[in-house]
Amino acid sequence: MPELPEVETTARGIAPFLVGQSFISVRVNQPSLRWPIPADFSRRLLNESCLSVSRRAKYLLIETENTQILSHLGMSGSFRLVSPNTPLKIHDHVQMRIGDLELRYHDPRRFGCLLWADSDRARQLISQLGPEPLSDAFSGSWLYEQSRRRSLAVKSFIMTNAVVVGVGNIYASESLFLSGIHPSRAANRISKDRYGVLAEEIKKVLARAIESGGTTLRDFVNGQGEPGYFQQTLSVYGRNGERCRQCEEPIQSRVIGGRNSYFCRQCQR
Image (cartoon, rainbow, N blue to C red):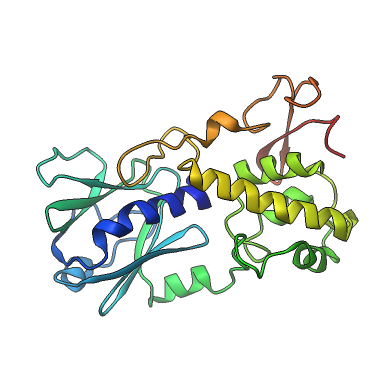
């Protein structure tokens, strides 16, 4: 599933080509995504000029003069900039022409969405989101305060969107390893100092992932159709049974909060 770095990479990749340009043609080939694409999508977007492309949590926001699109990439969604003459792929569900390029939304599993940001559904999706992990509002003190009455595993805690947005399974596992914190440790049993370390590692891991273009996991490609490369530097995620890069102990895997979690029992306490 595309996580925060993948969405940020997409936003940065397509923004220079969209901002200041108008959508001169819009076509919906398959409206049945996780939630149906609005019936008036093509009509409202046609001839609108793009003002900005940004990200909130794992949502991509495309703002125009009179409206705003909220998109989630789901499990396998991606936006690609291609020549309008490029043959359609079977799962290219939306085509948006801007200048001499076409922005296509591609989603084999159709778990993503394209909604109007002012719709009830979109408002519901973003109303309870916590702080951005790369912002000043997110810190070890914030994590410590939020954790005091929470006994769930710390990995599940930092993946809770009301606590902090965009820390998905891959980056939670990596950040906890670099902080030396076992993913199953109760959130309310971690000190303020250790949360300070964890917050900094979350920021560093996400920043490095964005610089690397995200993580290559099956379907993800950026706006130019290129895969991410952060997977090449993963310390624990997906490395069950392989040797820890720090202590040589085998990396272990356990299901925590319904998600596969990877850790080193020697390095993480």
